[in-house]
Length: 237
Image (cartoon, rainbow, N blue to C red; front, side, top):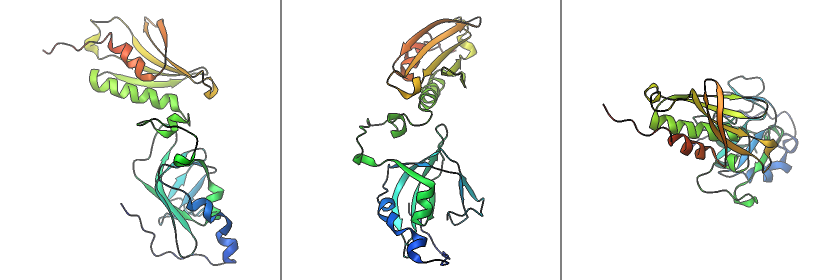
């Protein structure tokens, strides 16, 4: 895919070196695929994807993440643009987004929190870098991924809610299982422990509104393994 910036009318109201923030060019031209940025403040872009506080065409929120999909590009007028996706820790944008502006505009709105293999973070294959770095709502993302898989293979539904101590994914069995296991619902919890190495998940279930068991686990997927012990495939017919 190629995203091209066309028909740009660049403002030339000040000295180019001041307007472009040329001292920041090297910093932002180093952006490559798989780098992760954090949005430092709310801002907007216009229909041409240019940073433009007078437009409300696209709105970007402080604290959200921006995953880079295409390396930064520099244009003849000194502006820089890059392509990627936004992620608020729960929902990732479905389409790639192109953003461009002067290096100074970009530096005022983004910060670099991870730059590819140059960082000392060792990511495992197949794991989202945000999860490996414990960025954003990592526990909720893991619970959602695990419960989505459970719903695919055993039906039912789930909901997510937060307390002060943990995030819980509550799984409701398909009614067909009510005769095989007497429980109101199962749950998988994530205890963040302020992002420390003591973070952990747990699994359990409720009967008549009371938690009957809660077992500490390493991952949300371990919770699915435990739940599936109670939900064997139903016979057809």
